[in-house]
Length: 502
Image 1 (cartoon, helix red, strand yellow):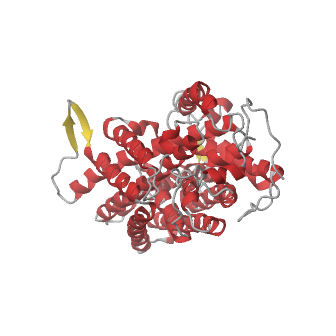
Image 2 (cartoon, rainbow, N blue to C red; image 1 turned 60 degrees about the vertical axis):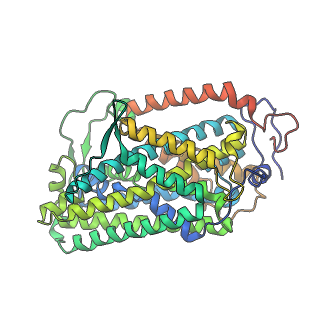
Image 3 (cartoon, rainbow, N blue to C red; image 1 turned 45 degrees about the vertical axis):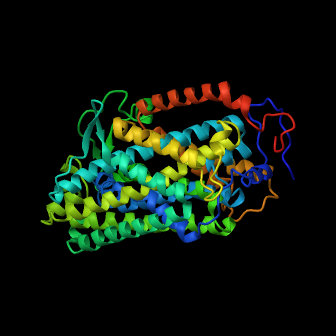
């Protein structure tokens, strides 16, 4: 059963799934299928496990959940799994590049597809630049810890430049141009080293384990100390409801889950590689869920070791609590060196996956004509989007090397969550419009679970600051202007007689 055509001028014209798949093998614009389920699982671990594993659990334990932070991680993993189920159904049904953008184009229409593509550009560009920036910062820390005297900031035309981000972005841009499979092999090596360091930290942490530190497991609720902050630093939900800040108790466990949820963000990027996966109907669900399971085990292991090492009150008293805080408290400051190296290795793999995801989203949008078509040309020999990879790498390197991009950190979260919301709703739409479509994986209990996923992700969006929402609104306004000035007029689906217009 095919979709009923919409008027060609409609903002909600859709692109047929058959044409979407056909476009993915257009000569000169196709990618090579070379990734296995193992590669995808490692990609998921690579992008989700970064610096956050060494710090976000400590912040959640000290400020919100206490020893029950392990439960916060379980709840966050469940919330992430709901959204990832929706991605897995789409990725196994429409195994092409573009992730949420492509899925939205096939179900909810062109304008929403553009908006979500624009959001993905925001998420991936900002995330890659922020992570590259932090990579340079931790490189300097590692140099200092090991008494290596190499300056990480140099002057260029009177401007201070962090050379670390430019170096790491350049390396992985080059690798991604040479081939996705080669990049995946390098990524696999770095990720296994990273996982090894995390497991080592967990095992050593458990040698200092004291069961008394887990009592009370859920500390009694109490008002949060300090000022509530101005309107811009409050969450939008708190500003709208006037709720007084509190911590611990059941509400604290839920607040902790909202915080650590962002440690799972990144699995949507794995779906952007769908066009480069062998046997996608089977491989994509296995790789996505396998990666999520491994990441969840690592996060819970770190949280359990952390709260067993020291009382949660020690973490609450620290200005920037982390695993290093706990190790210093138990008399093992040497662990700071191991953790710093682990963070540096961890961030390395995150950068690679984000750079790949950014170029694949741009590839899908330019192949559809919403961005200039010449951008979507791929290499004849290696089947990689060389032009887009170079442009993506240059943009990330310049942002990370010359700006204070880290102040936009929350923009990563709102861009991701907005994509989660639309993909969750789009699953319900696709079930109704294309019940005949062959699916390698189906979300159970649809439409209930997809709707719950959309509502939960929107709730998490409301927990972001009002300033983040204002910046997000500005970004959307700029995106809408570009769409009406260029994308709508040049979209291939909108041209009379174009195959795939829906």
